[in-house]
Length: 110
Image 1 (tube, rainbow, N blue to C red):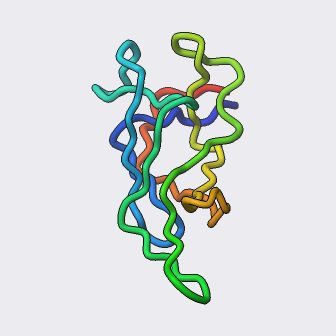
Image 2: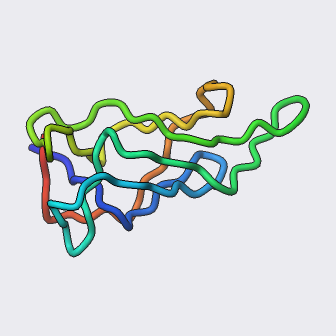
C-alpha cells in the first residue's frame, strides 16, 4: 500500500514551530491544483527560535530522506507522507524531524 504524495500547500513545520517554505521545480504534475513536491525541491524554514545552551540555533533548511522509489517526475522522486524531513541548523546540525499535515489523500505512491 502506498503513502500520500506531498503537494505544495500542505503544512510542513520544524519541531519547534517554524514554517517551511518550498520552492518546487515541478510544473508538470498537479494534485488538487497544487504541484507535487520533489525530493530535490528547496525547503527553507522561517520562524524557528530553537535555543541551545547559548545563542539560538534555529532550523533553516529541511533535507528529505526516503522519497518514493517508484514514482518520479522529470526523473526526480516525489516526496511522500512517510518521507523523513531532517530539519537542520545553519551549521548542518540536525535539529529534529519535520512535522507534515494537510496532505492530499487521493494520490498515493511507493
